[in-house]
Image (cartoon, rainbow, N blue to C red; front, side, top):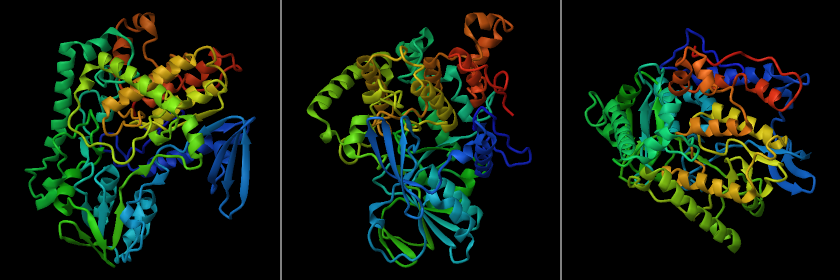
Length: 540
């Protein structure tokens, strides 16, 4: 499911591959090759990048936008544009714990997982770095720990007691027609069990989400998946595990469906035995740092030649002034809203909440969960999590990668298609009026907040909604070639049942978008079409 549609990624047959999970280096090389082989107007994508620039400030002008940037050698430059796509996403600014912001005595390297790839190829190989401490309970911490263990290091995994806790890891294996659990969750039939603001308005979705029988099956499915994750890990009874391995078990309220804590996938066949038998787990906070050790709140002292931070990211875009960010609909402190906006969005979200619970009653009863830290923030007020409502009429700016999704490749391609149509004016007359756009955005926000009570507070979390979200985007543009069944007539002309079965039971592969550029050009009368792959994606 990784890679774009043009072309799909090809993992070498001899490469280690566990249920479709391969080493990161193959995906890195795929992206390097991608920007060289895609050529437009005789210019490859690589030549259109401006590397080593830091964006300092973005301003709205009468003619569009001014982007103020600084080159590596402090050279200042201003880019003027009538259309702006902000694609900095959610993983650009590392979140560094506050206790590391001041002076400390630790003499080893301290780095966020953003820089771990370089570190693992150099300093991690040093004999001076035999003991490694890793902070954070999520997937990024697990990835760094795995790499350290494979390089023969002794690892201490430190997860504070008052945080979100350790991740719940979903087993990669899925069984049946699916290569892995990601594929199983990415078929349209399975997506009907994933309560979403983007769910199609069809009887089958209503049956699952609104009938007593459907909701009962949904609750059973939620419980079964969560228990399966715990059973495979074997936190309490795994043979050969170190004494504190059991402390990695997430809280009973930690659920995959509700995303009430960190989530990840166990991407190695020996993931759990390796972690259980080799990692010292500490559920405590760091109280002080010495030259080559850490003191924890439980009184333990941990030897460490390096301190690695799997502490997540800050999701804001600092190059927008607070006032411009608020006017564009980016999350901001609720207290900074104007009285008019505060009243408007309070009303919109309250009305949306009633509709969410009417359409998806199961969301009325989430498990116990951690409340938001810090000040209250507003929700993401972007239509489809892309277009600011304040500029929806002038079509001058879009935000890409601003929503939390489970498949960044598919989301990026669908968002690019929608944004191209939006910025080009091809959605003029198709998009709702401002009042309705606000109403739909509030519904998206509130569904996210209900579905993901800890991760969806800003209304931009669609982790298990990649199918319905991307379908909504491309179908709003007017495209259908990504579907295996082109309406009931298309199904009946393909061995009478195969089209429908494939469309609902096969995973939505990124290659499904392979013919979409040509379809788009035909639909909007652009040239004579382009060369592209034929048919739907096939799993390699």
